[in-house]
Image (cartoon, rainbow, N blue to C red):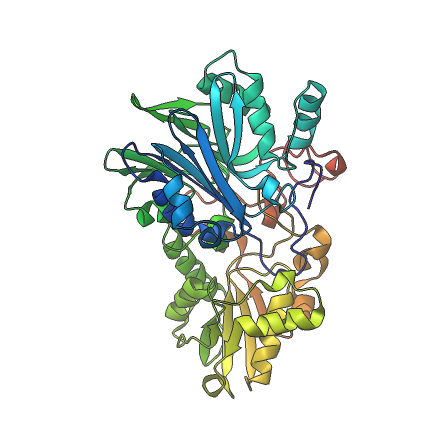
Length: 484
C-alpha cells in the first residue's frame, strides 16, 4: 500500500482471491433528526464496502465535529459517542484503503478549516492523477497530513476560496481524473458529487423533509428513506435550507459504470443505475447455464457471492440447488494470515462442506469471479476430501486479465491467474474437472446498455479514464484506449 500518496490500487490483497471492496459513503441533511444515529445505521448497511475504518462528521451549525476509528462500524461507535455527535447534517464513511496506508490518519471523513468555514469530505474511488496533483499542490505550499488521495480534493477546494463552494467543486472536477463519488459537508450544506464517467455509485433519497445521499440504495432502506434516483455522471447535488439544486460538470463521452458492482461489490438488495443487483446476478447464472451445460447431481453456490448466480444456473439447468458449503459468518479474513498453514486453516474456518449430502455426488460449484485462484483451489480440495466424485467450477463472469485503477484494490498482473495461464492450466491448478467462465457477451447482455455504459477494463484492458502514472507510460494508452 502506498505511503507517499502516489500509489494506486494497493497490492496488500496478496492472499485474497477476491477484489476488495472500495469504500462506502453516506450523507444526511436532516434538521431536527438524530443525524449521527441515522448515519450510523446507513454506514452499518454499507459495511460490506469497507471494514478497515469508520467515521462520522456532524455539523453543529457553528462548526464540524468528527469521530472516527479503526475497525467495523459497531466497533468504532457506541451509544455514548453517538449522543455527543449532535447537529443538523452529517456525513459518514467506511473505508477499504486503495490509496494510502490503513491507518487512523487516513480514516475519513477528512475535516479542514478554511476561509469560508469548516468543511468535511468523504470519498469513494481513486484519482488516477493524484500523484502529479499532490506534487503540484505541495510545490505551491499545500500541506498534507495523510497519504490518501482524498486529501488532494480537500486541498484543491482550499485553493479556490475566492469563489463559492459549488464553483470550487466544478473547478476541482476539471483538475482531478479518475473514478469518484463524494459527499461534502460545510456547516450548513450537504453536497453530493459523482464523477463524469459515473464509475462509482451514488444515489439520492428522501426521508420525510430530509435528504439522504448514499453509495447504495440499501443504506436508504436501512434508515427508512425512499429512493429518489441515482446521481447522473458529472452531477453535483447541493442541499441546504433553501432546498435542493443541481449542477453538471462537463459529462464524459459515455458513462462507464463499474460492472463489478453487479458481479460482486454491491449488496444484492441494492438498486444501482436502475438495475436490481440480485436480479442481474441471477441472470448471470442463467446465461452461464445457457453457455455451459454440465451433467451433475447438485449445484452449490460459494457463499455468499455465488448464491444468486447459482440459483439462476440451477433454474435453467434443472439441477437441484443445495447449500453444500456452510459459511461461518464470524470468521476473520483469510488474506491477512501470515503463513500458508494459517491461510489454509482460514478457509476451513470460513467454509465447511455438508459431507453426507455431497459424498459420491457430481457437483457444480458456482462463484461470482476467480481472481487469484487460491481460495477456489482450497474449496475444490475440501470437496474432494468430503468424497465428492466430480467438481465442476463455473464462474459467473469472464476471466480477470487486468488490474483496476479506479478505486478497487486489485492484484498486479502477476497475481491475476487469468493473465498468467490459459483456462486449461487454471483448471489443473485449482484441481477441478471442469472450469468455465461466462463470456463477455453473456455478462453484458444481463444489463441494459451493457455494451456501452459500463467499464469492463478488468476483463478487456480498455480503460475509459486516462492512466497517467509515470510507471504506466508505454504500458497503457494515455487516451484510455487500453493496453498497447
